[in-house]
Image (cartoon, rainbow, N blue to C red; front, side, top):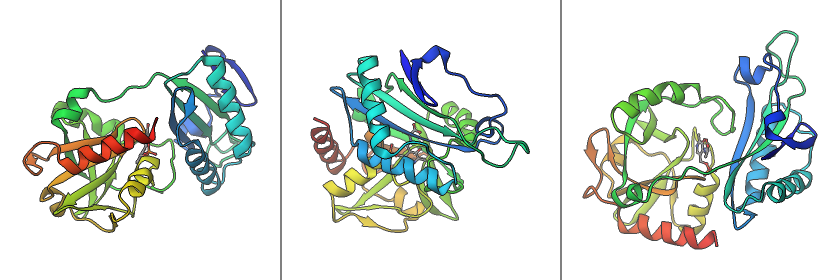
Length: 267
Ligand code: PDD
């Protein structure tokens, strides 16, 4: 496989990064991640906008325009024959004399195999643990996932798919997904302390009456349906949180219908 490294496409095994890059020693960098379907990068413009915005907000210089990045991505898809796959763009904080201040970072674009949840998980729904946590600079797609990587040992032990973050009883998101709740046919999703997901954006287009507002953990546990959205999970039903059954404990009709409509958008 080939990747884009700094300024050119090279064999992926030849890509390298200085070990003192603050991306590594301080967890300071940004990334984004999207998929191809039939060789087409899905919703590419939205992902590139978010990547450019993440660079601006972290004061990292991105040496390519959105149009240039799109061209590089199309070249990579061809070189790797990437019919259905994942593409990860990373911009690191760079090597710095004081090992702290950002400098000119390194840009990498890698192609990956996709790891979707199994069909069984869409049929039964998945389990989340709730945990008191708030992501720092949440609206930026930074490379810092130290908390959930550490915490995943706990949720795996409990047989949970992932976590639900809340602070003082107000929920935000999951470790790598956004959250939606449904009660009496009304859909709602939080807006604060989250990464504004591209999948979330598509759901808001499919269901424009969705309320975008503060949601309490209590409200989530009492919901008829709950689901999570992300690039790889698409729209995944959640049927248990912290041992509480959601609704009747099975994926609900509104969630299933939204997933069906979302899958149509990918075609
Ligand atoms: N995660 N919130 C966080 C913190 C995320 O990291 C992600 C994406 C999302 C969902 O965004 P989107 O719908 O644009 O994928 C929400 C990616 C998939 C990852 O970490 O691999």
